[in-house]
Image: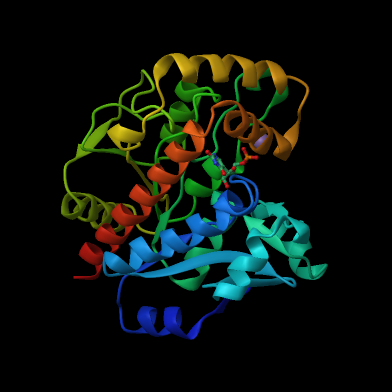
Amino acid sequence: MTTPSITEEVRTALAEDRPVVALESTILSHGLPPGRNREVAARLERVVREAGAVPATIAVLGGVARVGLSAAELDHVCDPANDLVKLSRRDLGPAFALRRDGATTVAATAALAHAAGIGVFATGGLGGVHRGARESWDVSADLGVLATTPVLVVCSGVKSVLDVGATLELLETGSVPVLGYRTDAFPAFYRRESGFGVPWRVDSAAEAAAVVAAHRAAVPGTAGVLLANPVPHASEMPADLHDRLLAEGLELTRDVRGKDVTPALLEHFHGASGGASLDANEALVLSNAALAAEVAVELAR
Ligand code: PSU
Ligand code: MN
């Protein structure tokens, strides 16, 4: 794979075996509204640093994969005027050749993080199997990439707009260990529980790190690991509001296809929830970044 361009700070940390946490950029450019996205970008990097790790936000700028972004580059990614393309892993080659600016999804970020030598990555929600996938075949590339890329992804499960059961089945098919962090329930992004369980539970960052290390030794060079961390209690969306927005969102996006589906659903949630979805989204991604940093610190011991 093309070696990404890595900032001095991240390169030095990696060379010294110090903890580094990769962060994705699609959540900034396509998942959060302008203004708020820039605040969240800064907070994410701050919580990673406070937990003792170096943050590495990943994007493609001018056709170059970038690992670690300056404040000005974060401004650029977060400004809707720059119209960043949403890049999954399959889009990396075209974006490099055509010198585009793009924000990386979980799939593309995990691939670039791994290419840079980073083993831990935090995000909000993983992409998965969409409802109705039997007809639409809409299954996020995130799942296939996680099955072949040995990176730990810390997230708050998948959105309830997806087919959670089918997503968990494909994670099993891909031999991806799924760990609940201090929970037996697989979380559903805005809600702490999806109605589905997790096959494994860990109760500390040290336990999570031990599992990751053992997984890497047991089946080296294969799948990543998913660490599912529920949205903090105080920021969980009330069930009735969640269920109403979900029903509306599914109806509104019935005719949306391809990579526009997830951003369209998110936009509906953010517009119609009176801020509750944004608060939940921010709280969970910050919590995931902090947990990822704690696990990265343990792995670096
Ligand atoms: N889920 C969220 N917020 C997001 C995404 C997913 O709750 O911002 C983004 C992530 O970047 C994820 C991508 O990798 O959407 C999945 O898109 P698709 O379903 O088109 O593969
Ligand atoms: Mn899709």
